[in-house]
Image 1 (cartoon, helix red, strand yellow):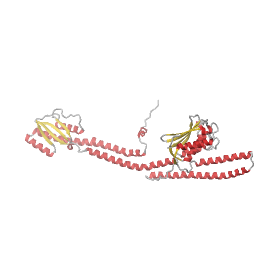
Image 2 (tube, one colour):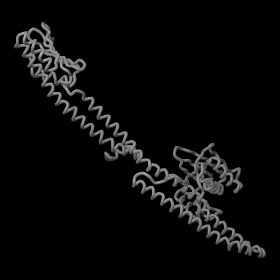
Image 3 (tube, one colour):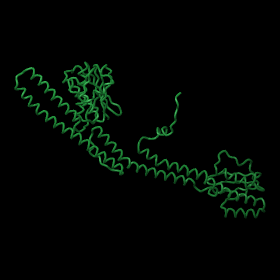
Image 4 (tube, one colour):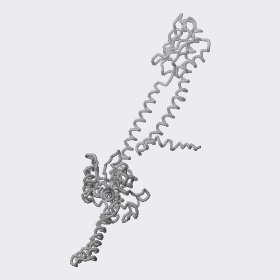
Length: 448
């Protein structure tokens, strides 16, 4: 039986946002929300209730005093005491002769914590035998108590029972939080934007596209990372240029003696030996050209916005003409599929793939597919294919497969190496798979 292991941190990470901006915002907002929750609980559940209880005790004591006056003093003195209470306590005190309260009078369906506190304290002050009622009407509390000969009606302002406006506290708390979150969003956006630009520049450089307007800015750590990226880009570009210049010089130096040998052979009489030498010289020249082409890779070509469908058709037609296989190739590409690429390098890459397919298959199909993140250029043939365990060997420079299908027949072993080098210079890759036609599929994947 499989053992189930619960990892709380892994579970929480599934629900967290992926972006730095939103994660940073959560780091700032969450403590504020938690703090406000604690403060609200302490204020409303503890401090506000205690304050309301104490204020209700004072009001209940006043009610109990006025009730005692109504029960013990003659009518003239009771009227004077009611008038004095109205002036000093700011209550509206009225005696309703002959009125009665219908028990039970304190139980209502919808009551607040203030109503409950006032009811319980008044009941405690007056005792359990005397009937009374409390009702809230707007911003006042109406308290009725049965006394001798009628009902004493006392109207108490709300601010005498509870704090005047607790809603102001909530308004200030929420308002300050909104202002804080707004400031945090503006601040974080300005801090995250340099990182986003650095990521975009690195991705564009990885796809072989120029990033001429990128400059370090932002926090010191981000500036350091941006300067390190610029230094790395300069070193890579310098290395590629030095490699290209060196191998171009080597190629030129080697072609000079080969040219002299060709001239000497041209003046010699034809024989089996001279014919063999001409073939060797031709192979050497071809090897030098392909080696230089591999070393240059994408070279110094600038990336441009090109119609990928037209580019694929153009490369496939060029390979078909070179192999005299116009009737053996079928091309299916979408119209107006624009992509920023190094046009000449990519055309050379596709030409190499189609040429390899035409070497070993009777029928070749070239198609282009696009999804949300990448464009796939598929070259299928019906040839013998390559075993899956040996497909990576086909990409090794100057390497020939000894058995099965040899992708480099007629070449020096650089066709697929050059194609993959160009694909990776665009930020993509070149892989080999089984073809639906029974042979080999070369899939060139380019990021959008």
